[in-house]
Length: 326
Image 1 (cartoon, one colour):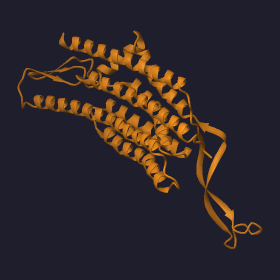
Image 2 (cartoon, helix red, strand yellow):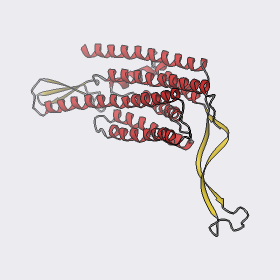
Image 3 (cartoon, one colour):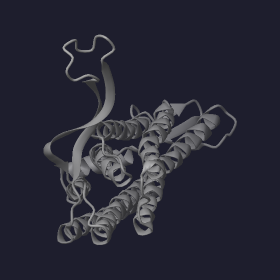
Image 4 (cartoon, one colour):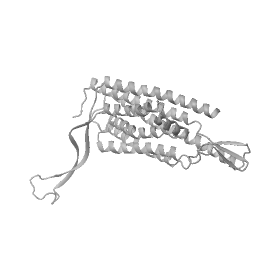
């Protein structure tokens, strides 16, 4: 009875948080539309351009007549709408959290996953929305190369995939989680390096109010993205400490009559497994509802704060400098 009531209480808390985060995403999206002052970023990439030293020569690159220089390619009027990306990642978060609010097969699948310590809906959404967020952040930090955007998006999507793999294979390994931290560090190096290179190489230092918002964006977003990893550290630690204690019990170091263990995906349908005198109950992962709540709150906080910071940055740029790309 206690496990049933704990499950019901956990589901109620998760439902309430999903309602709140849906409201936040919807409200933030409406505010973005109402305050729309976009700052489109042109689609461009750097490349090596071959050119003749002597334009009148007919020998091409023979006779040491060629040199190369770095150029930026543009593709007509193609631009990236930063506020459009903000609306897109709000919509993605709102969609799945809204669908799981109502009784039906989607909600059943959602709560079944939570009972087993996974949430595929969340990780699929993260794999789509987090890459959009990293493009917005990179643009705010001064990155303009569309190829770099593409690589950052791929890395970020893979990072979310590693998070899901860790949940699915929690019993067998922690390698996806550890690899996730490596990929996290590698991904954030690129926009951070671009930002500080821009500061050191620019002919003129940006105004202090703009710099303050950009620094704030970097600090807040890298901290919030890192907090997702910290939540999974807690999840991994909870799971494996419980498994360790259970195995110690089964090995005879403790002689209590009943031991409570985390579930193995192959043993969910076997409520009782007898091992001599020791009876092991496989039950839903305790504490995972708290993990789900933490992810939901973090996701809403990261997305809403990024929307607010971007609008502040765009409005400050336009009001102070009427700044445009040239």
